[in-house]
Image 1 (tube, helix red, strand yellow):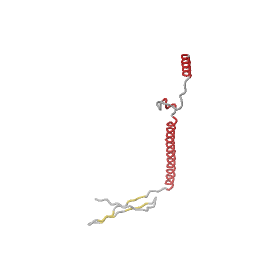
Image 2 (cartoon, one colour):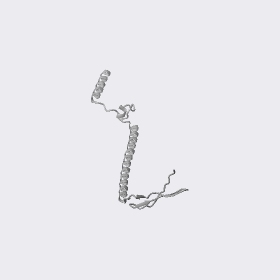
Image 3 (cartoon, one colour):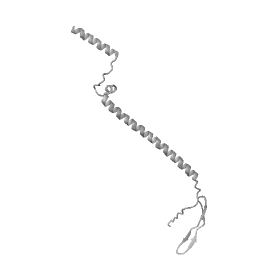
Image 4 (cartoon, helix red, strand yellow):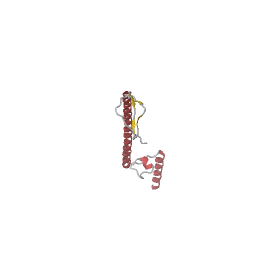
Length: 129
């Protein structure tokens, strides 16, 4: 058999309603037993509280996401600036790690290297005399 539905609108909350359905066929006419329906109580205070909590949570999540977005954008911007600076300045650490072969700034020599260079210069000077 087919199923028939009917939606009743504008019921007041917390009230009792009694329903009875009448059916009619070609041969007969019969009522159904009475059915009690109590409409649920709609608590406006709960709805207002839920709306406030939901709004506050949404606001907090929006702030967190915006802070994360700003941090990520600043990080990318800083990396881009550092990359541009390194391309122009050719940092010493980068030349040691396989960057450009020649650096505009000479590498700092250790004391042992300076002494050995001086000894070599003195030795070269003696050969020329």
